[in-house]
Image 1 (cartoon, one colour):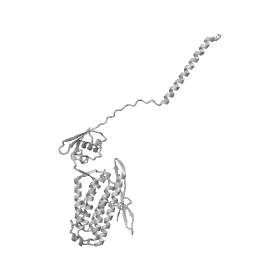
Image 2 (cartoon, helix red, strand yellow):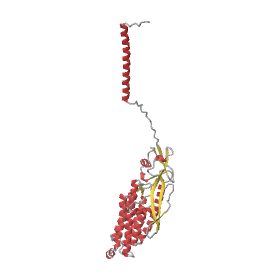
Image 3 (cartoon, helix red, strand yellow):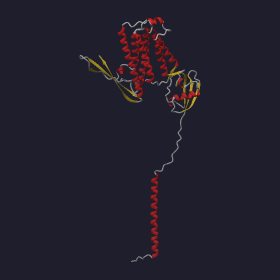
Image 4 (cartoon, one colour):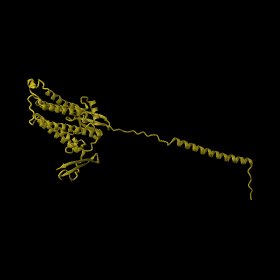
Length: 398
C-alpha cells in the first residue's frame, strides 16, 4: 500500500491560487456574456440597412393630328400614366393658346366618338406614343348659362306682350277691350312654368357635361323666344276670344297644368337626389310621393309631365300657336325619352337580359272582379358583379 503524501505548504498554496483564478475567469466570462445579451435585447432586432429602389415611371407622348388634313399639330410629351384627357387638353392649350380646353374635341379614330375628359390616358395607350385626332368644337358655353338664357327670354318676352306695349298693339283697342280672366291666368301659368325651370337650373340640376357649342344655345333661344312671341301676341291681343266651353274648360285645363308642373318638379328632385346619393345601380324608381308613381309606366316621366303641361295650356287658351308648339314639344320630348331609355338599357342591362316573373292572378276590387298583378324584376350586372335591382313594378290589368 502506498501512502499518499501530503503536499507541502507552498505547493498547496500554488494549487489554490490556480484553482481560484480559473473560477474567477469563468465567473467574469459569464457576467460578460450576460451583459452582452442584455445589451442585444435592449437594442432590439438588428435591422438591415434599407435598400433604395429606383422606381421607373413610364411617360407617354400624345401626338395630336388634325382630323381633316392628318397633319401634326403638336406633341404633348411627359404625360404621366395617371393623367386624364383633361390634363392633356390643358397642356395642349399651353402649346396652342387659341384653343382653350372646352372647345377641343379629341378622338381616338377619325370617325370615332369624342373622348370624355375624365378618361385615363393609360387606358388609351397601346405603346408609349398615343395618337389623337383634334377637332375644333367652336365657341362653347356652360350648361347653366345655356338654360338660364334659354328660359329667361320667354319669361320677359311674354310679360312685354302682357302689358300691351303701344309699339305692339293699337293703344285705342287696348284701352277699349276688356281682358278675359283667362288672359291673366295664362300669364300666371306661363310665368310659373319658366320660373320653375330657372329655379331648378340653379338649385336642382347638376350638369356634368361641362359645355355645349354656342350655336346650340342660339338655336334653342331662337326656338323658345320665337314661339313665345307668337303665343303671347295672340293670347294678349285685344281681340282675343276666350275658349269655347268657357269657365269649365279653363278650370279643368288650369288644374291639369298645375298638376303637371308639380309632377315635373318632384320628378326632377327625385332624379337629382338619386344622382347625388350615388344610387345609380338601377332604373330611377318611384318614392312615396304620388307624383313619382309615373315611373311605374314610363322611364322618363319628367318629359311626360312637360308634354302634359303644354297640352293643358293649349286647352286652356285654345289658340293655334300654342297647339303647334305643344305638337312640336311632343315630338321633341319623345325623341329625348327614347334616347334616355336606350341609355338606361345600355347602362343597367349591358347584356340585354331581362327576367320577367310570371303573372300571378289575385282577386281584388269590388263585385268579385279579378285583376292580374304582374311583378317585373330585372337582373343585371354592374361592373362585373351581379346585383339585383329591386324594381317590382305592379300593374293592374282589368
